[in-house]
Length: 463
Image (cartoon, rainbow, N blue to C red; front, side, top):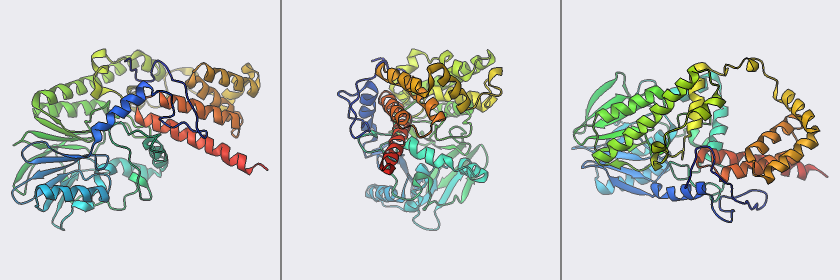
């Protein structure tokens, strides 16, 4: 099976039902679809005994929730995506040990790890720990008045997709929020009461000695929890079994990839016998942990270093994604496949994070507007009709990326052109079927649904 990061080698014939392709509408599943379906076993609901005192609940929501059992109480690491799933976990934890929660520790401020906190706050005495700057990413967006991330995040997550269209999220089971605002609306968020202010801090809670360690990576407020007596690390979203989301298509500030690799290296220096990631099932066994984390760190470090090398050669982002190719030894590892993040996005993110929007090509200092470029392309193609003919040919020859781009030219000139919207929707659905990265798949299908909805509304409004 030859899996590549951007697309697979061949797109299977598509059967459209009611104008929208569902994931199982193909005569035969694509390789990407089969891989995603097989991934679902990773998210089966379970409570896993990680070590003598550590239990991790997986499959209740989209992120693991862990319990560390102490003499007089328990410590909870991350609380999941909702109070509802948190209550289910709390009830099942009580079946193992019926002790009060003494503390909650957030590895970072993302809502899928924090919104279940109220289910674990047994009393007002519960300490809630986080790193200084907790919630930095969301606070920065709010201060700037940026709101588009919520709708883009819903498309990335596939909230408007059916169960057939949305297999899973690559690192978690498919989840549909049941409250206004989805995972981005916090109706049960609890504020932190205690903060990690230094690089490392030792805590003693309920007879448990543990350490909080600053670990900038996916977020600037990230930390990991180290339980030295049992050599267990709770890594948060700096590690899970997938190519990491070094850039999220919902839109993020630059995620410092260099510091991210340093955080993984620091975890390796602890010599853990188990690591609980921010998603997927825990990895248990010293040799297995060391092998997986080493490959994870080295693959990301290779991509970063090679991208910087290309940047210094003067390559543009489009050139970089062809220049930076991960060695086969990393591409062959299932836990580094792009189920959630994607190497191409990471490369572009690194370039933008250090150099900003300008790609170095003088032509692009003041580029044509989308409409201005479309007018010139249309003139070469023989007008909008000529573009539509080219789009039809591209779809027939399964050149779906080109079909989508050609459709954008038409829509720049005629935003309500139904033929172009339907053609683009067809192209996006075909691209979705052939991509392994679940967030990309969700975004493609969500975009196609929106396009078809626009056509349906326009048709309904026509006498």
